[in-house]
Structure formats: C-alpha cells, structure tokens
Image: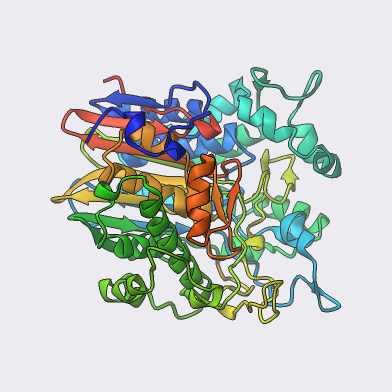
Length: 557
C-alpha cells in the first residue's frame, strides 16, 4: 500500500481538508487499537502489551469508551462484533438491544399520530441493553487474559478518574435544554463550576462499583437480581415498559458472517439486524466491474460510487430487518448475479428517477455510536461497534449504577404502512415487536487476502457508517491511500432518500459536474468517524478519524 498522498493527483474534493491537527495514525509491530477516544485506545494497547489478544483488548477498549464517551456508547447499549482469528473461521456476534416484551407495532402511535419524541427520549425509548452480555460472550469463547483482570482495569479507572475529553465537553453542551429536562444525567456530569469541561477530572464511582461486581460475578451481576430491578425502576419512572424478565431473558446471538469478495480480497461483515454487511458487499459487488483506480477520484468515478450507494440503501429499506423475525433474502442481495442486474441500471451520465431505486421508506437510524478496530501480535483481528444510539441515548441516567440507557427503540420503523412526505410506504420488516432487535447501520468489517486478515474497519454516525466504511475500504484497496488519508479526507454520503448527495467539502466546479449528472449536492459537516487498523509486512498501521478527535495506540512490546 502507498504510504504517502499527493494532493495534486486527485480532484479538489479530496484536497480540501479542514481537520484538527490530532495525531490520527500510528505504527506498531506488536499490535494496534484504533478507537475514537484516545484513553480507550491506550487502555486497549496496554492489554496487548500485557500479553492479551485482540478480544481482551476489545473488552477493555469498549468498556473504556462507555466510561469516557458515555454520550456515544456504554453498558446501557449494545452492538456487534466481527472477529477473525489467525486460524479458523470468522465469527459474528450480535449483542444488539432487544425491544421490551410488552412492545408492539402501535407503541408510539397516539390518536393515529406518531409520537417521535417518545422514541428518542425517556424510558419508552429504551430496549434491553446487550453490551455486558456481548463482551462476556466473546471473551468466554476467544479471550486469553482473565475476565476479572480486564474489567477491573476499567473499574479502577472509573474510580480514580480521568480527564474529560474535548469531545465530551462539546457533547455536554450540545443541547442544554435537554440536559435540564433530565436532572439525573446533568448531575452525573457536573463539576464544581457547572458541566464538566475538557481536562477536568471525570470520576464515576457508581459505575466503578457495578463493574467490580461484573468483574467478579460475570453478566449475572447485570441481568439478574437487584441491578435489573434498579434499572427497571428508573426506566418506568420515565415512562418505560421494560421489565426484570426482559433482562433475565436477554441473550446474545452468534450469527453467520456476511461474506463477499472484491478484487481478490475477502470481505467479512455483520449480518442482520445489522444492515452494514449486506450493504457493503452489495456496493462493492456493483463497483467491482469498474476500474476505480484508473478513474481515480474523478466526478465520474465518484458518481458511480454514489449510484451504488443509492441502490444498496433502497434495498436496505425494502428488505432488511431482524431475520429472527422476518425473512431477509441475504444470499440474493450479496450475490454477484444480483449486482450485475443492478449495475446495468447505473448510468455513468445521469441518475434514475427515485422509484427506480426502490419504493419503501428508509428506516430511522440516528447519529452516535463508537467503533474500535484491533489487531494483535498473533494476527487476530477484531472490529466492534457499540452504541446507545443518539447523544446520551434516552437520557435516562441510573444514578446508583452510573450509566445512561439507550434509545435504540428509535431505530424501529415506528409507523409502518403510512406514507411519508415523499409518498413512500414503510413496511413491517423493521416494525416494533416485543423481543425484536431494530435494524442498524453498524458495519464492523474485516478484509482478508490469501487467508490472512489485512484490514479491520468500521465507524460511527448512523447511516453514514455504511458510506464511511465503504470509502475506507476503497481508498485502501482501490486508491492505495495511507490509512491516515483513508479516514481523514472528506467523504460523500447518499442514502437514496432523501434525494440529496451530502458532501463535506467540494469545489464549485465539481459540484456543477455532479449537478449536471442529476445530483442535488448539499455541503454538510461530517457525521461519521472511521477507525481502521491495517496490517502490512512491517506490522500494523492504526488510523483514528480526527472528526471525533480519536487517536490510535500501538502496543510498545
């Protein structure tokens, strides 16, 4: 792979970089962790130095992310992991939140009208968390160091405290009126002079105490006994319907990974209820017929990438959901034959009418989330994405336990069968149902070549996770950019609906070309942040997206 990037070789779109001066790449021969919070990467890298493997490092990194960046992820949420051991089969772990047993398709409908606020904030927005169960399950199967040792590292950090990050400072002040509406949350992150500021010590003794119990007792400390009773009590006070039985019945699912190929590389992704694996393979299948390297980052080349996105997102809206509840034609969607039929419909000189891509309303999918990628000295690779959904999730904070509950119920289609502003109809694939897991855009992905893992990648940011991960992959495999450039340079996003092409920055001349091709170009700040670990003949290169002020950390021994 090329390690340098010459700006004049590509169009202006990728030459306009306004990112922070954060160090976003690092190298190591002994192992690498890339996450969107520096202290989480450092904690994970220390595990690698102490003889732990990628899974051990992943457990500590994800728990630390929830501690340092509780607005994005934590033990009140859930997610997905894709793990590829150096030898043996890849594994896909689903620890997504589940809807309460009492949930039903009309849960958020009042007098025939959708109560969108109830899907986002307050107790009714929360599903049963899965992160503790997920981390324990993957460690039990693949971990090396003792579970207790790993979890106690984070419990100790929570008790001793650590500096508040700049991003945490910003997120606390993002919507002050909402913080006022949830006093328990505000109190948890208030210092001597008001809301915590960057650099101020953040301690969380209640979470430290809970993690100590989890370290000693395993997941039963979270899913049985007094802890779920405390959670349910607070959730119900805020209008929720979670019951203790929802915790007692919660389980993770080991799923069959999505597999595809692209230019001689193997692509391993997460299956439903994640939409990321299918969408990524589908887009790569469409793009495989064109020589993106020769086209470069020209407007024609970018147009082809955008059209592939639109077809994949339209199919996402039509077909995808929790396939424990609904039928998902995964083999069809990731087949080369299906991609060939879609590719015929891609016009290099224009776009199609909206309904020629699809006719179903896209499911909701909100910004937030944390992703981490890990590679260890034994060549095992792990990609995990976890979330509480939107910023601070449901904003229901459990004071005695020190964490915020998710608002993952917002990821369901809350009002299926009703036309939206575009006249499109949502379907039942992603409708609310008790025990069901909502559709997600989380896209943890591992790329292999000749039987060896070479890339672990994924991101945060709602549906832009999919496009961000796609750009990360093609910038490495097609454009041969360095990992730092692959995650740092401006990106584009199109999800078919709305009919808008979102770009971070673009010269007016480039915008004019894309507009002539039929795109409505909208300049918009980034939502997604990509974390990447690349394995080379000399070791690992880690790259963390500066959009979330992330930083990778390499093992020093």
